[in-house]
Length: 306
Image (cartoon, rainbow, N blue to C red; front, side, top):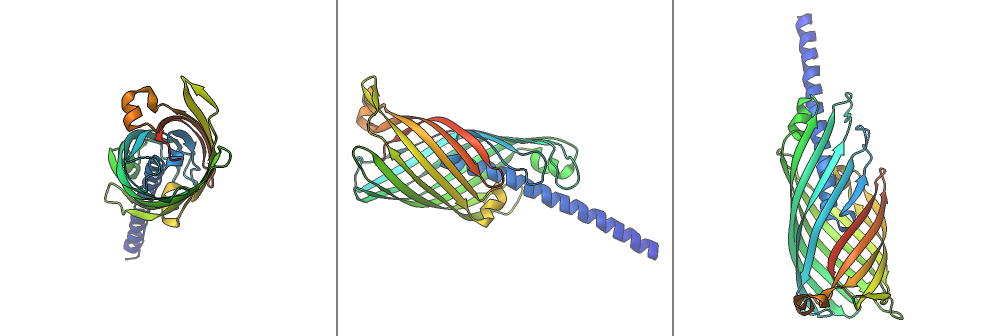
């Protein structure tokens, strides 16, 4: 009887160890895909190269993404009510070598993803200096998993294709003014986010906040007889506990600069429909807790806010 009890205890220990590793592998999958899809949705982490602390799980993950997103505001710049639509697509890759979940080196993982984003909302301008925004968006990401290792739990989550979705309800406000041709601004945007994972994993819901301040310069020069101005800004993102658990950080800080070239008049349809469109060349540095760091270099089209 004693031998039987010891055998049962040993078997139970092995089974619990297996369950624990499976749960840890699932949590690690949520961590990497959560980082990936949040960066795809967050404007300050778009189109760049980043690294995250592995949190004791092996070599630090490397994250890169490229986004092609835009928005269209109906009506004229300065109108009190301006509905808008937004959308786009992008590509992302996150890799981590020598994953260690407490049981030694489990191998390397890579998630290559493509995603689509759609949304819209309303922009309200109760005065020339104040703008309010309310909207919603959805982002759907398809990941191609690649796992080089022999662990069955890791193979389940990282060795197959999977789907992740992020739903974003957001509201924001900005204040802007003009002083001798310079246009300083400050803005706050609150998000309620829900991340929907594959493999019957529980959704993650939580809040995040984006704070930003910056200044637009007057026209600095012209290119093809069209004005070029600059923008300098600082910003921060804060996540609540539920979201920080699956993204690997709970705050991040950004500083950047952009050159903005008003390209609308080049093409008649732009001049008529997108006359406030600017082509932006952007460079930004990022830092945060848990060794989040990286660079963002991008080219984008945007509708001038003010």
